[in-house]
Length: 263
Ligand SMILES: [Zn+2]
Image (cartoon, rainbow, N blue to C red; front, side, top):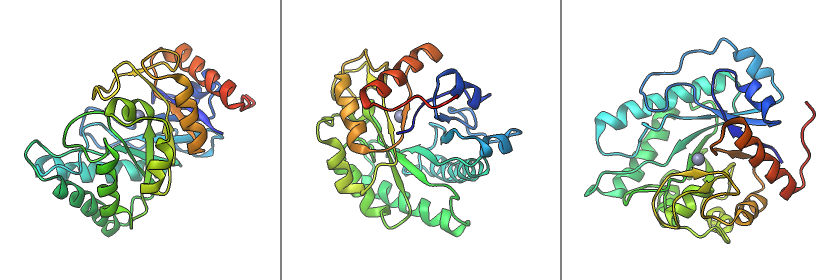
């Protein structure tokens, strides 16, 4: 089982080595900004690396919204990131499920997701698996609770689309972790990546505040159980830099009985 961390994008392979990680996730541009990613000078080195790479799309992307001043640039930015992720040989591009504004019809939000995949197909395809991630907060989210996720998958499930399960977001979003993998797979048929995070916020608090696996409000054994059931690669998005994340990765390897990769 491959286990890694969300790291700084300057030298992701060095960050992987520092954590004894065989997987890393990083941003290709400012996560709060709208700038398209620049081609990376280390693309060839990244493509050739033994380390598995995942790219996290900027947080500003919201392809579901009815606000076309956000939706249209979001589609473009998502496609730009997918192309840039493919150029470095990434295994997937993670993007949040998004939301509609209060008073707007969530059904239109799901249809906007469908249109996003149609737009990408018309533009030559994403070029890398797009993994939609569940989110923690909001009353009008496309992928906070599983009832919404089921409607989202009704709209886009015919396209090639993957799922990234974040344990902090699920718990803070109001989904019990016990048996969660089976309930998700009944909808999506797959889990491509697990974001293994504890939660500073309480169950159903709606707070997106990650904690180290041994801290927070979730029993760490439940996080391990989710990973075991999912059988997917794992990325921790936890605080504490190299020390904090290396400890979280070490904890998971011990619990899961996986070996540290040779340096
Ligand atoms: Zn996450």
